[in-house]
Length: 319
Image (cartoon, rainbow, N blue to C red; front, side):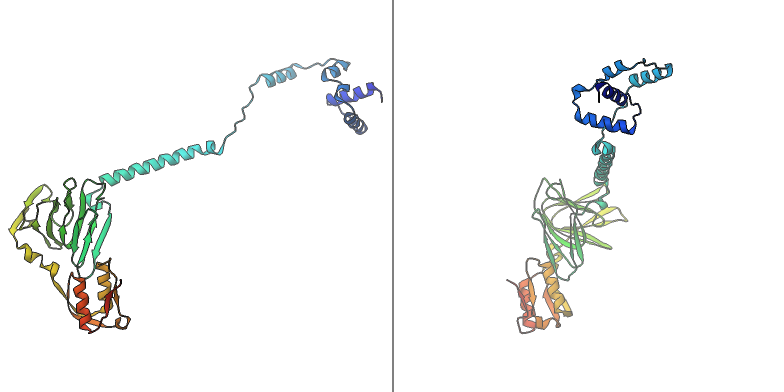
């Protein structure tokens, strides 16, 4: 096949003119066998055309617009970019939630303050609580002590009491100890020992040593050792009297009287109020009962009395 025929076929191919099936086959074979330098360029093909290219005004305008019109930018959006507004909204929500929490934590009423710890004594014995600051609180039966502040980071040591307790407060002048929301008055102390009762219709305090200030709203009263105080709502004043603190504190060394009380219940209570010990009951006595008097706050003596009552070692402390 001569070069003119090849050029003609190649020209038709470049100008997108219709080729017959045989012509397409011939052209494909020629293209696979020929080198690029042997083929016509686009300029050479245009020179071979026997007629000039003539464009209409409409076609000219279309081409001009296509060339000069700004191209649409292709945006590559990452997952983070696509959802960054969601992340921003989430951050804003969390920040708002945190601000609200801080506002509630600092502006909440005293009765709604956070509880850091709660100690209860559901037994008839005494329960001794040793607090983080070195203070000690002895709880009577059916009494509850609630810790209302962080003794390490807060500027005050705040607790509340329901029931009856004896407080022995460690001295930390920079951190006053406050018994709040425990009946008709609050108590503010530094280092002292006092007995307090907060029961329905009975709210009193007696001071063994040190000094405390009791308050009810704007009313305040300083209490000295050997004095007792209660608040008289009908007179809106504190009633201060002299008390025998020794007699007032006898309940700490008192005895409790039990009648037909299951030994398992006694051992359970002893383990509750003496968590550092482990009182064990002989398995052969788990269905037996005890009647008699036991010391309210003396574990070794309690064990002796129980063992003597059955003339056998039935309760021991696990070593």
